[in-house]
Image (cartoon, rainbow, N blue to C red; front, side, top):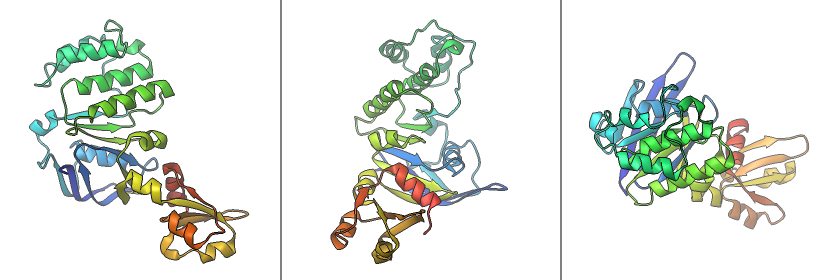
Length: 282
């Protein structure tokens, strides 16, 4: 499978933060979920990919090319803040964008407005947060990008609107040629649609893995001290000592269960994994 993004030893240093030697590959035709705490480096990584901030070192290739205007034509971007002037009407977005993107599709834009029940004559300032987010996504889709890069696209939205937006993403990659990289604090959304997970903590890459591999193999064990000591250290990713027990994140729950029949080994969600890796002990 071709790589749509390839990053090698990417580093960006601020006074109190460092995105440190990130190396990863993003496959064409897939949805990649980017997870991590606030301040972990997700937005810094996205801005580096888009050329919005300068890297200190490392290499970034998108579609096997260094970012340039031609490459940018094939990228659709939605950042956390709305990029529309509040005083224009929804339909005015079309007039603006057709002068920016060579591949802008006016018919597709107005079809999307109709499909998603957005009134073209409404002022943008009068749209709800969910409507604004749908308008942003509709806009980036209407210039036929091959890659979407999205920072918190479902943040603060109600479940119905979130489901609509996730369905848009699934439709977008259906042809096998398009790809999506999106960050989100809503790990359930990522679990629903992502093929791969990139986890960044404190500026470092924790893992870059297939979602199904993570959810099939990682597990949570809650046990007493004696049972904790029996678990192979090779299988322990991190753990927390609570008042009455140990909570242990393991990397091979089936093997743990096989070798420790008395233990209850639950499946781990992405939220469980994040919490125990960020807050737990190694």
